[in-house]
Image (cartoon, rainbow, N blue to C red):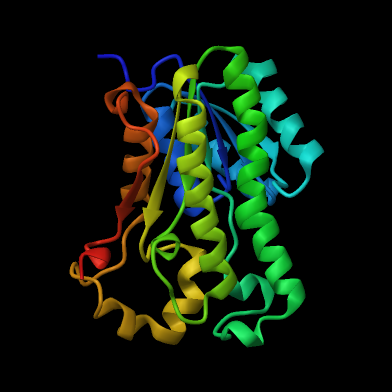
Length: 255
């Protein structure tokens, strides 16, 4: 039986670990040729090795999503290698602790921390979408999935600029879905809750017990559980879905 993405080509940013790595493995399992981009080149290469060792096909790319020229080159590299770009998962992102803002309230965020957060988590998604959409228009179709967050749906204390960026990602997602519906391009977002990745380690160290009391499942999610939603949104089984933002959060948003 053919895989869900058999013969498709896919670009995954932030593919060096966590949700991005799990998605690269899931895409390859379902027959996609995968391009793994990450700012940490060694991490991207590790993901590629895992995909290839599992019998898939993958390549690594540099992944600075804040650099317009780098993003354009990234998309062109995928097309040069695989002929087209069928699926894009814009997943690259950073957390507050990575910009010296972990645990800080809104007025305590340094200007530089806000600028960096928005550059990576919001403008970076837009830059990727911009060049992916140009390619998908040229080839008459494609699918984009953006990584949002439950932080794109509600407020979360001590996560000010992260929350703002993720709200913006969902705005980009919904607007692009409307703008390109007639071009056979679907655009959706996945909104993870608290997932077992490096990005959540700081938050869980500070507030983990408190936060898990708010999750009906009583546990963190696994990157593989997010990857399965991204896979569904990227394959033809979701052919009538666009502009949607799906929570994968252990029931957190139902409270």
